Length: 65
Image (cartoon, rainbow, N blue to C red; front, side, top):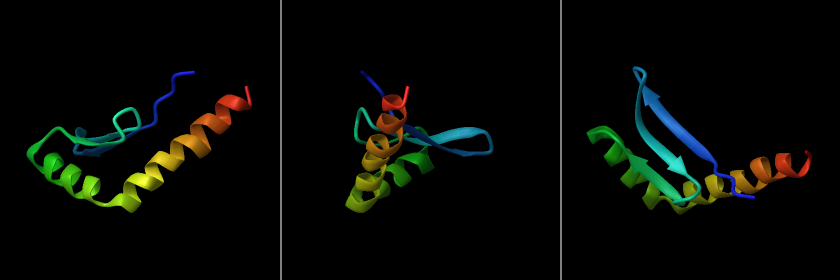
C-alpha cells in the first residue's frame, strides 16, 4: 500500500515548510521555510525520527484495519 506521512509547519495560516516521507526530507515554501528546511535536513536525528513515525504510526494503523 502506498502511504505517505506529511508534517506541515504553519505560521499565520501560511504553510512555510513540510516533511514528506515520500521525499524523506523537508521542503520549504517561503524564504523562512527554505532556511528551516535546510536546517532540519542537516539534522540526521530529526529526519530519522520522522521516518520512524511513518513506520510506527501509519503502517501500524493500516495493519489494524
